[in-house]
Image (cartoon, rainbow, N blue to C red):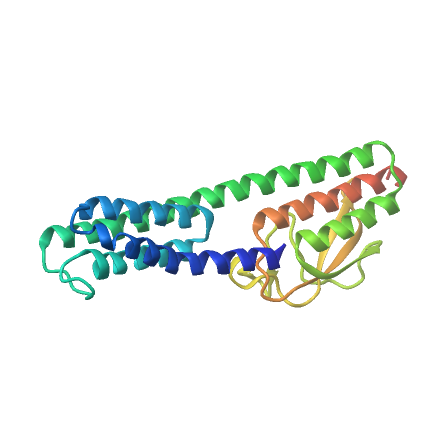
Length: 248
């Protein structure tokens, strides 16, 4: 999936530079009869297409490319990066500003769509595990499934489950998803999770029943949403183990 995304992003960046160039060049035979404002609108449509299908970076590149080639091919003096007439300057500036705004709106829309899709996947994941626990599925099966899901969810190098009360305290993913290292809040959004092993406690009936020891991948950012979902998965293991506990 990552390779496909990288390949798609590379194509978007190439298109961001080349499409405005091609469209502006195609308009050259008509520049004496085709209003510059209309040509700018055509280039804005190209920017919109790139911004909608590509990344924020691709949208910005398309905006700069469209502005430059509009200047080079479609404004006097032709074939020079110079604009001498005020209406053309205003049109070029408008093209650039509209391109930036459209790119930012497209990026935010893409982000919101991605968040909504992820949250839907998380709900489905937690629901599936809760169904397994509610149906009396074996605790070992629940643990194995959660281990596999944690590796994908947190982009881990490894994950193992250790039953019982931990004898040695490790840096912990807290129940609210935060991580504290040396008493300070770890900046997970910017730096990813700490490279050392972390513990994710499993609790049931108010007691610690075990923990997942996870090995994060350095420099892989993990959002707070993902860490909170990881806590919910660990809680499902606690729910699976709790029926076997004796009442205090």
